[in-house]
Image (cartoon, rainbow over all chains, first blue to last red; front, top):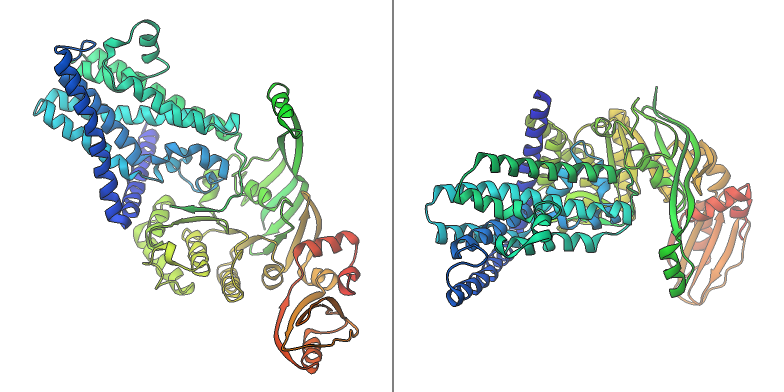
Length: 269
Length: 333
């Protein structure tokens, strides 16, 4: 047990170190950093406007959600996406890193390859996504402690699930040779299910959202918990999320055994 | 004691082959045909602790694949490997604390940040205590003369300065073996010389074993006592550099530019390879005519504007090894 705790602490420490270096690297271009982060937050605001119009036209509830519920899932989706891309921006580049042989750099170091690979890049626009969620929550949920605590927990779980989805999709590169298309589409596909009320999905799609496409675990279940807390549902959320992340981790390491290093000229950005 | 032991090492790659054309592309979708390529083919050698070994060969010979198997990046298809008593394939993480690597084509420094930031991160990655790391950085900064560069973003450094920082970064955790894969690639003569000097100094003072792959014959001549030549995945020569130099590296290329029209008459040991209106390319067999003699003869012709002396390319040396002697390189072709 003690060994696992030490290992987990080391992983957190490594993530923290990479975060500091990445942030320092991003701040080398301060104007670009602020512009990209602010631009993304502004871009996201247009969706609030769309939902506001929709609710004022239709009125009442859409798919069982009122306006504030929709804002909760939007805020959570945006901040979870932001957090995952601030800390693990390389999740979108795994295929390129495998194909170009850039993975060598991480294999030569004594730390976890997947964690090092994911952490070694940050996304500037992700800061906009991350902060946008907090602003939206502040505007729509004010000081609702239960909503805020589920929102914060949801960011951590959702961020890890989004990362796990990307890792799983990009890991296919080890088997297919190039899974960049699957990799770039997988997360977008799941997010499309995250940003609409759960009630509009029925039958098989609903089952898929609770299994293969874990959209419900990213936003809808945290919203349920924010409305009516249930320890059983929370346990289910934590268990399923942990299982997803473990699967992605093991799948990546299985694939890594098939790695054939390339020889392109590489610089770390 | 041996630092590296390799026995019957093989690496096979399975590659898909496809005939040209659209029809063949569709056929390859349903009935793909694979071919096995032997990147490394049954090689065996030993490197002693403190030795500087040149592992040379032309592009695609299997040098990088071998180094990647020795460092645990790639898993061998067959054969036995031991680096510092460890199996790189199963003990990669443990081994990485004791080896350093510099891949001329792959940087471990953050491009937009000063080297110091990368050094601090690498220090944490290798679990080096803060005080020990600071002392080590100071020591390496002095030795590699990079003290002034540590706070300049890597993107603003010259290639020579960057490589010096790369080598320093790879030495932060005081490795027992340093793997250098084409460390001087793209460097000018002065920068190459500086890097070679530093590598030698490190080997002398700290007893670091150096495993160097390069297709620059200068790296081998100036750094190593022993060289292994590899081609098409097989070792074709394993002998002291001195012998290799005598047998196969007995030719220099002189490129000369004149101020006006010129006339050259070949003498013993000097062959005219190519001539233009204002310049010529000469091949000098150093067993017959020393570079000193060749230069004096050239100056005596008069009107010399510029002279460059080069080593023949590695591909030519490999070809001469296959041909079985130095004659083909020495006496002109």
